[in-house]
Length: 85
Image (cartoon, rainbow, N blue to C red; front, side):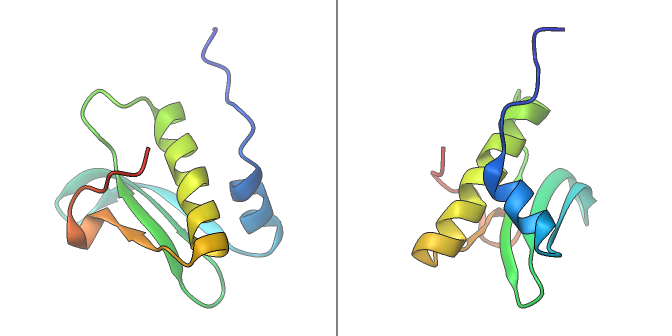
């Protein structure tokens, strides 16, 4: 299978620090990816049409980076789509 999982350093950093990620249904949303640490929710992304799971995880990794480095918290579950690549 050629769709091997890329490096996800921010997800790894989060999990190593007792944070967590969740992937699955959220309310009426069929698939979302969330990330949080002990203090706050860092990101909630809605899986886009035709987006692969790998692509969703890459976006989640980037969203975690934006939350930690730029204090930009993405919430697509409650606020709708974002322009985060």
